[in-house]
Image 1 (cartoon, rainbow, N blue to C red):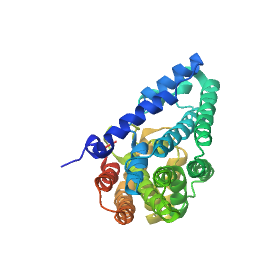
Image 2: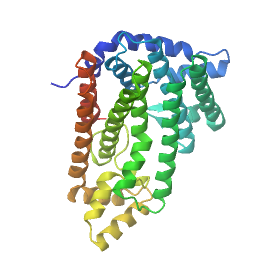
Image 3: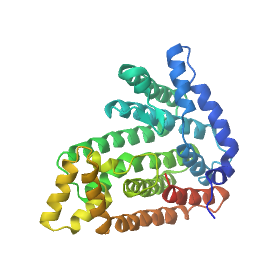
Image 4: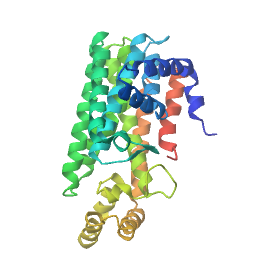
Amino acid sequence: MTVTLDQIQAPIAAEMEEFEKKFRQSMQTRQLLLDKIMGYIVKRKGKQIRPMFVFFTAKISGGDPLPEASFRGAALIELLHTATLVHDDVVDESNYRRGFFSINALWKNKIAVLVGDYLLSKGLLLSLENNDYELLKIVSNAVKELSEGELLQIEKARRLDITEDVYFDIIRQKTASLIASCCAVGAASAGADAKTIERARLFGEKVGMAFQIKDDLFDYGTAEIGKPLGIDIKEKKMTLPLIYALQQADWLTKRRVIYNVKNNDGRKDRVQQVIEYVKTSGGLEYAIKVMERYRDEALEILRTFPASASRTSLEQLINYTIEREK
């Protein structure tokens, strides 16, 4: 039986509700335009997976009931992460994010950049005003990693010479660092020692790696999953299924596939040829195996924490993230 997100969230349902209220209040401002935009951002928030990781990790690290620092840590991550997304949409000239208009689509680039800056400063102040220096250090490091990962991907996309090692570096920085920071913040906010914080961080990193590989697999699916089929190929992003498939190819085939990726210009026939080649070369099966390996490594670390309802929910959350349909 598939476990729903509401069922997974049950042990922290009251805390999540409390967090929603606190976060909404923290986003209010007397500047009218800014208040309107902040209201729009709060309204379109998604599944709230990041605060869930913070709260569950805090609980399994000894923070039960949750201390106020856990709520501030979750808010800090949401503020800084949202700031990076707002700026990303400007950089990518994207008009939509998860079915909603982006900030730049509704209020133009100049306002979107300023809103991103505002969210960033709001997060910094939240930490400094409460002396949450450890939490700020963890999250700031994740944002630095995220930026480095994006730049590494852009640099490599020009030449399409990404090896598996480089791909793992990119997704560790771009995606896994954020989930790792959620878990490290959870443990740190509960007053855990340095070893426990590092264990929680590594657990989150493994989950993040599995999560991103799952996301890359969506590029080859047929279901409506929130991002168009073949979008990574159109954007010349080298993901694990394609990297593996190219490793299996002879020189001529490799050259043809790379030509189609480099020169697809959004042409469906060329994108489809790449998708078909990856499927027949075992690229999907290989990526699934690697994703499952990261999941198993994450579960192994998780089981070093004491058994509890929160630990069970974290196990379910890991499986939810890699079995999801979108």
